[in-house]
Image (cartoon, rainbow, N blue to C red; front, side, top):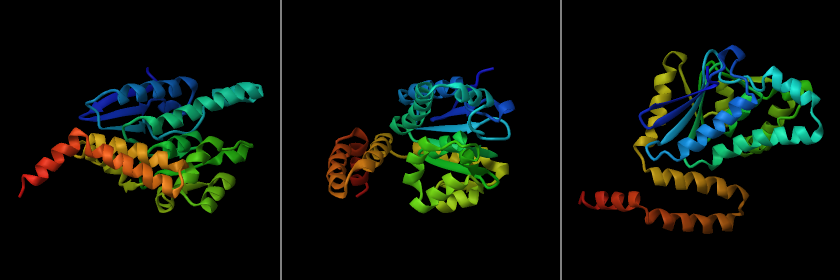
Length: 252
């Protein structure tokens, strides 16, 4: 059985973590499968969005026991290489052109919570649970901190990564980690409806917007304005924009 299930529903590519007996815990094979599938999806012109979800009762429980055992025996250099593999996965989510949506049910903990946090958008069931419990075993959620710090206030990020408690989907939404909450009993349909929005808007405009937002992370205000002007001009030259203008003007 493949550790990652790949399927399409219309223009939506579903990447389903498929280790339900392990609560979809991350290991090297699953992370590499995610990277490969993200790259493949990004080249498919028929797709408009990507959804990462989990099989079974949970979204993802973090690193599996085998991975934890390995890192406890690694040298610093080996641990650095291993950590960079996770960083590469999280970074790739931001660099693929398509919007990547985490659909969280059950628990998203440690690296699993990090995976959700690294996605462009997060939707969750109202009963879902989140947490960065790494400090409880002397670990640091260091890679996801780069994303968390950009999603919530400094004080809330400090609290979440240093106290390590589980928190509800409602609290995650309140602090800005979750975009939408949906009922458990209709979650799959609600996720489909949410992700299908991208089939109704300009593909090129969404891609330019995603790239622009993340480029602005390292820019000052003036550079952000300047880059925004450049992207604005670039968007005007796309076929989507030209068609949109013609359609709008033809209504008169």
